[in-house]
Length: 274
Image (tube, rainbow, N blue to C red):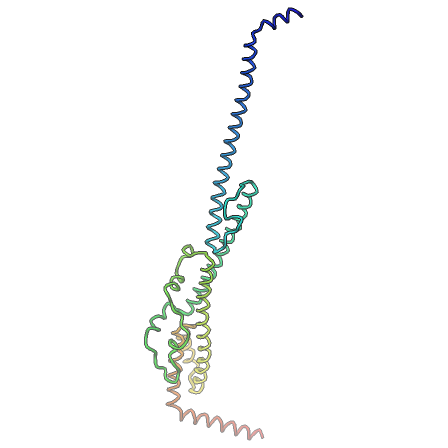
């Protein structure tokens, strides 16, 4: 109506402009504040992800280096993007690396156990004094085994590996190969000693029979001197062989007579059978 138009026309223009400007400015401020809040939240999330990724990447590098593994190309640096997929990848790699670390720990412990078992069997720790003494004279029983058979040099490192705590050892692959190499050296010594013992034991048994050594005396000697593959055991055999050979020399006439009697008896039995 005409009256309404007059009323609207009477409202000041400045009032209308100010109201619209206030409303627009309020909306823009809210949007800007929301944008700033979102931006800050994203920055905080990125910083948190970056920090978390750096920590995991550092752990991964340390494990790989401790194992002697090369760092994979995809995980040399953080990379351009740290999204959910990237975080999942490094979590998976870290899990695998920790599993490899435990496997290596078990491998080294097992290798160490074998090394110590063979070293204990050979009693290498107690043999240094024997090696340092002049060679014994065993006469016809042969040269002193301590100076003839292969020797396991008990270096400071080899000595350390006999007692060191597992946690003090590096889990690098080189540590595992080092222990295996020491064990192989021990086994070479052990095999040489076993071969020597088999040979000399047969010689001793033969002489026991020829000298008519009683079963009781034989068993007593075995129980006293049966010390595995130690140098003490080997030298005990050499002492026994030397004594038996000397006794054989003293009783050679008796032994020959006895052997002649056995031979004649066999001839007689053969003639009777004919």
